[in-house]
Amino acid sequence: MDLNSIEAVARPHERAELTGFAQGDAYLAGGTWLFSEPQPHLRRLIDLTTLGWEPLRADEDGLTVAATCTIAELDAFDAPAGWSAAPLVGLCCRSFLASFKIWNTATVGGNLCMALPAGPMISLAVALEGMCEIWMPDGGGRRLPVVDFVRGPLETALAPGEVLRAVHLPIEALTRRSAFRRASLSAHGRSGVLLIGTIKGDNLVLTVTASTRRPVRLGFAGVPDAGALASRLNADIPDTLYYDDMHGRPDWRRHMTLTFAEEIRGELAGAKP
Picture 1 (cartoon, rainbow, N blue to C red):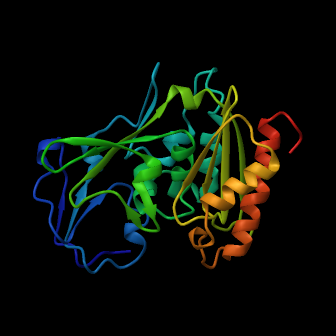
Picture 2 (cartoon, rainbow, N blue to C red):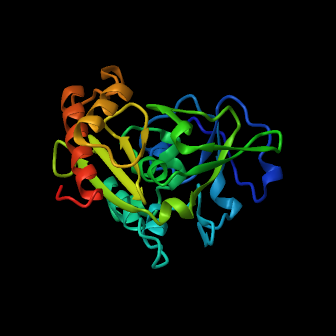
């Protein structure tokens, strides 16, 4: 869609050029949402892709994903053999259920900054204990866990003028065993429920997304029994936190969350799901 209110497009090539952010400005990465509907409040776009950020960097500390990394680039990443949680990358990429045209344009950072409950890059980054690197307009920076970055539908922790630079996935999370469950109301529909469990030793971590207004991450010392797991979910996810839209009613999302959580618990404990 043409955005006929845009008066200027800035194409910075270094951080020093990211100045003067004002009302009516918007950062542009893939733009798959930005150009999907009218944006009459916008006057200027700031194209982050001209900064030339390296999409992916893997080292002994884990994986750093640039905010401008496309879904296609992330899905094509060939993870080291010891990264047992790496299959989650492909599973979450395919949870977009989008065409190749979207995969080649949509970005990891864009999906996080949209902060929709069904955002699969949110699911991936929270489950793998992602840490946001944020550039501040005064030239400084800060770090924030992805689970705290996404506050609710279309709401993030970014202040005006701040830029999500990258997300770091630590090696400890990438070398966990994992289990994945997802459901939607139609074969090609948006995720209504998406749960990921990871475990290393006896430390189980359960991440709940899509069914809730914001991501919920639950850690357990040991693998709980079925009753303890259900009690924790009911205590930490009140009914008001379950999302309600055309892709699923709250009671269905709650039921599927409890069902998938128990399946994941059984799978990662070594039992049949």
